[in-house]
Length: 237
Image (cartoon, rainbow, N blue to C red; front, top):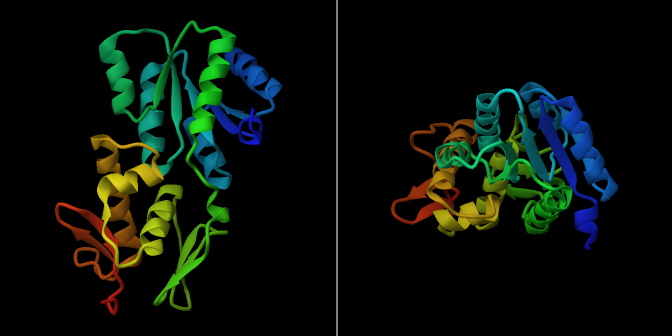
């Protein structure tokens, strides 16, 4: 088993403290770092300070709250979200996937199968820590990987979410090139799909509001109809 799997950082969000203890114990026995919280606000705060490789949601008492949490987190993170679910009802499963869940773990599930699913998702993990990415500068825009922020000119410092940073870093790394929407989604989210294309549009919208003087007429983040997006500074040919 690779070092990556043994050192996986997992955030377990659950309203069932007993289940939290059991699943966390199983994962830590496999060498993974597990952090447990019981509220959406605590999860968001913890993730903002130090991103995780994988999120597991286990809302035993309120399934709708679990879906709400997934919808809140999905636009902000590229990491896989796994959801414990107590039924194989198709409509319920579809609701979960539409809420941004990557896999539903149907309970009851054996400990061995649970661990196998987690290690499989960590093996697929496409997320490189943002601090490991290169710093970039194009014209007056400077992208700081260590702080996950964009610096405009001399003074303006703007904090970026994990997804905003990754999308902008990808486009700035290929400035002047038109990147297909599905290529961007694959590189940032790790898979393709219409739902993720919509999330990408939302990220581009937020980035334009942060870095463009006039988001309705962007200078940097330009849309190429029918193709995708490009980062093209005004002086770039």
